[in-house]
Amino acid sequence: MAEHSLLLVDDEVNVLRALRRVLRSEPIEVRTATRAAEALTMLDAHPAQVVVSDQRMPDATGVDLLATVRERHPDVIRLLLSAFTEVDTAIDAVNRGQVHRLIAKPWNDDELRVTLRQAFEQWDLTNEVHRLDRLTRAQNAELQALNRNLEAMVQDRTKQLAQKNQDLRDAYVQTIRALAEAVDAKDSYTRGHSERVGVYASKIARELDFPKAMIERVYIAGLLHDVGKIGVRDAIITKPDRLDDEETAEMRRHPEIGARILEPVRFLADVVPCVRHHHEWFDGSSRGYPHRLSGDRIPIASRVILVADTVEAMTSDRPYRKGLPLERVVSEIHDFSGTQFDPTVASAFLRILEREGERFIRRDQKFDIYAFIEG
Ligand SMILES: [Fe+2]
Ligand SMILES: [Fe+2]
Figure 1 (cartoon, rainbow, N blue to C red):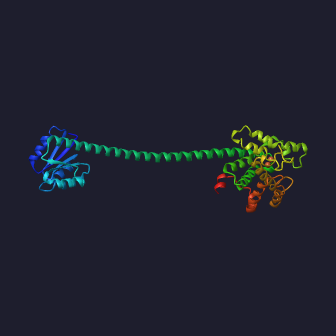
Figure 2: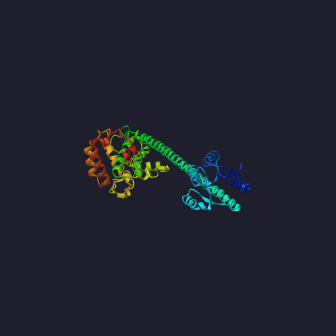
Figure 3: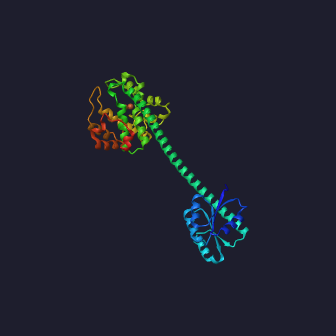
């Protein structure tokens, strides 16, 4: 079967026969119809790419037939055979888009063949354009689907990664907590001290509007601030009485020991100076240690921890006294603001205390950076 099909419509069988003869050598399949209705039925049953219709037929004009063909089969190329006497109607039909081209009657054989070849070429071209258009659309749709998929995949992976990060961070904080607890356990009176210092310090850090990463660093440094007590003799740590000079000197080595213990841990690099300087005084006086740093030269996390440490120590029971009331803590922080404590940190603490009162030192508080920041 030829690739191209042509439907010829004319009520005069002689004309149809003549046309067939002209087209005999063309590589196309030719069908014929003598009535407009018949032509439409045939076209429904056997698609043709080109229809040539006579204008004057008993059951319809060629223009009307071709207008119907256009409605039902918009891709079909429509040619009208018309005599010179009908030329006005025919031109009008071309202009209104019902007909692609006119073939003058009587026709020139060579011209007719060329016209038909061009009609099939036009069909092929339009068909190819449509095919490419459909292909582009399909590919676009596919790409869009792929993009949506990719986006979903990226979101999914990001979520998984965030979860993994969170798990890792939790595990790391738990390890640090365990270490801090081990240190606190050296003395039954300091059980939970480090965790509470971490929590208090992180609350002050939040009050100071520190960024999230910094609040976390303050908490971790709070947990680890006394880790150096591992290197201090138990007899000194648990001694209920005042320490003598030599014992005080040994006790005062704990920030440096702690810093040394943590130094080899790469991911704690930021925390090391905070631990080393958590007993420096803001005024740089000799009461601070180990380096008698002052003001801004003391890491801010250390300044925050010093306040938190003092609050925790004062409000906790000791072998020689019960935990002190918050009023005592307030006056202490107040009195030493500017000498021992950074005034900015001290007033941040006092602000929170005004809001929270006893809740500030509630023992069951846990550090949760997410609850903290978003809550
Ligand atoms: Fe300490
Ligand atoms: Fe401490």
